[in-house]
Amino acid sequence: MPTLSSPISSLLDKAVAGKRLTREEGVTLLESHDLPAIGAAADSVARRLHPGPFRTYNIDRNINYTNACTAVCDFCAFYRPPEHPDVYVLPIETLLEKIEETVQLGGDQILLQGGLHPRLPMEWYEDMLRAVKTRFPHVNVHGFSPPEIHHFTKIARQPLRTVLQRLKEAGLGSLPGGGGEILVDRVRSEITRGKVLTDDWLNVMRVWHELGGRSTATMMFGHVETLSDRIEHFDRVRELQDETGGFTAFISWTFQPDNTDMAHIPPAGAFEYLKTQAVSRLYLDNIPNIQSSWVTQGKKVGQVALKFGANDMGSLMIEENVVSQAGTVHHLSVDAIRRCIQDAGYTPRQRNVFYEFIDDVAVEQSIPILRP
Image (cartoon, rainbow, N blue to C red; front, side, top):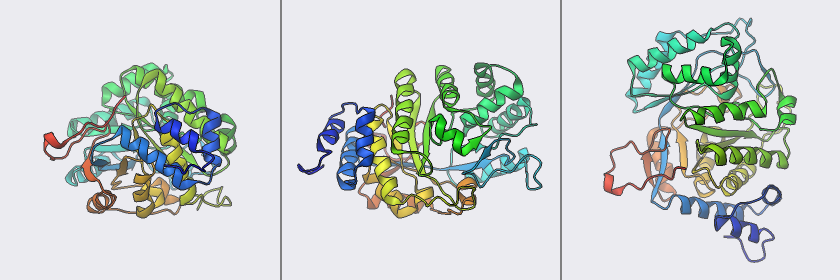
């Protein structure tokens, strides 16, 4: 906990006690350099929400079905314009082979995302989902970020609710929070063109939650946004969670600049990452889980993040194509993830996207992960 002399001690005490922080208070915390105090407070909140001896991880695979994209994102090294010679669309059989490999490694989920392809019809996505669920009925498809879903409404020329219902009926299990970046239109307009803005991103999540679906929320920071913008992002997510309760987790990571049109921006370091994650735990009082981002930060910082508000180590990430295109490549085995959790003083537990334990630890030892 913060020392008595810390100028932010009253704010940290307030958050630890479960009282809601204001936007102004959130900005004050991000402006502070008292990382140990902020981290200790976030750890206290995480322990209050998750008092058991467990910290979780999951096994999945990030499968990018196409890199063709009509949007132009200055921060993305993965996408290709639709007519580019390097454009691909993954054959269904290749997709199924990748899922089979994931299942053999103990995975129960795929993260399915792609660019905004201008010519794939809505039926193509439905056929892909049905093929996956027919072959692997137990595998959850955590797929299609809000920008993709919004794009599908244009392709299908149907309302958002109808598109989401069609995808759900075809086998979509949950929505990832991709494409969130910073949920402030000024920032979004500066770093991307042809992509969904804040209200529509949030509305995709709202309607999905209204249909009974669950999703995650994310934030990519450390580029052109201000500290106030980060808090506005937190606030918009928190407001929607108050309304729907549909977010299972929040994941933040730092912008990876290499091989992008924003390579001139120096990368944010571990200090800024840990502070921002810790403040997210303090601010997002209605979101049950905070996930560490070892994929962008590496094993050691990802492990330290478990003491800065995170209660989840994230995914084994058998395959990852987007961050790696920006020059950031970290790999961990299941044993390595489990050791990270154990060395931090916790018992590792495998979970699914809904934060339910799916490993073989005795039932009497389990303590349910908090869910809204």
